[in-house]
Image 1 (cartoon, helix red, strand yellow):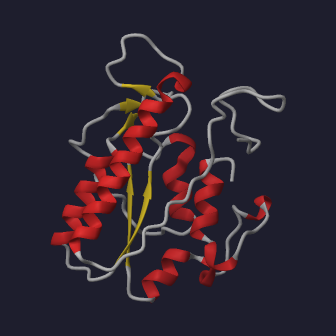
Image 2 (spheres, helix red, strand yellow):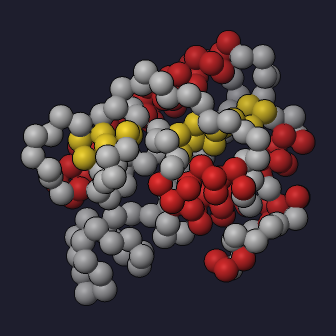
Image 3 (cartoon, rainbow, N blue to C red):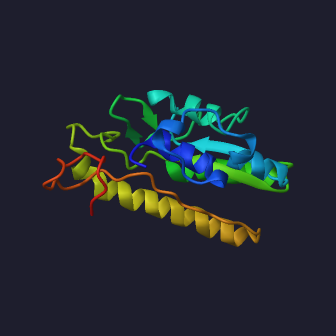
Length: 193
């Protein structure tokens, strides 16, 4: 998918395959919702994000399209290494995942299904503390290395816990770091290398 909302809807409706884009915002049969299916299989669905979910009503879309009644984990007090293009906070992935992991270890649920959404690589993000506004392409390598290191740290910690698990990383779209004949740098509508 070329945008966050449709990408997460497609994931949340994975049991019924990929529907047409025009059908994504219509109600789906109950058996099509992934988190509901996981709940019926004995998992406690949980939600964590490294942002507030307000842009384009992302959190509302997630709730309406398969995460009904699931409250996102609180991010109060987590460091903010980036700001979105609109100035909204983007919380540190490592700290968000650590908080979730700590809560998971002390929680009562024996089986958990976490949906984690990060926007650390989105176009338009600004590093906190930059005195001069830099283009997203200029900070992409820094942000990419950080998010990959944070994810690796999380995976290593989960492996060390000894718990059985599946971690699936689902990318939604890139940011076209370089322009080409089809689109300018920063666009993401047409998948290209």
